Length: 196
Image (tube, rainbow, N blue to C red):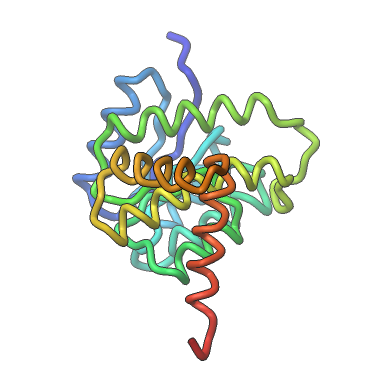
């Protein structure tokens, strides 16, 4: 049976891991799962996934550690799943170049479209482009999910509510969605500066 693609899923919460693995397999993906960072890296080296879904805070190696390894050594794109959307976390997600940032609690019906979008973007990218230095276009593609994640966390909104709020903000400012998302992220980063 052919699959839509190979995904590595990493989460130290076994229930979340089982839910994600089952949901993505049902959606037609080949799933490799790990409940810690060390296993994740070994499995990634062995199976060469096309995308990784990483929990951020885990015992031992964090999702950030795994992401840095995947980017530097295997050129595997990744997205983060996290219950945290504080300024430092958001800044680190951006710095590492994640293709998406999804804030828990998550529904598999929210994750599958994000995964499908990441696979679609992957096909559009020039294969020679280095992962460590994403193009401006790749950064633009990241700012909307990042801004949505921040709004979800700040205002306890669902993904749809946060996206609607961002769209309303963009409409009220007469700006494209990505411009408003970028302004929101810049405001968050400004607030995170020391001495404020």
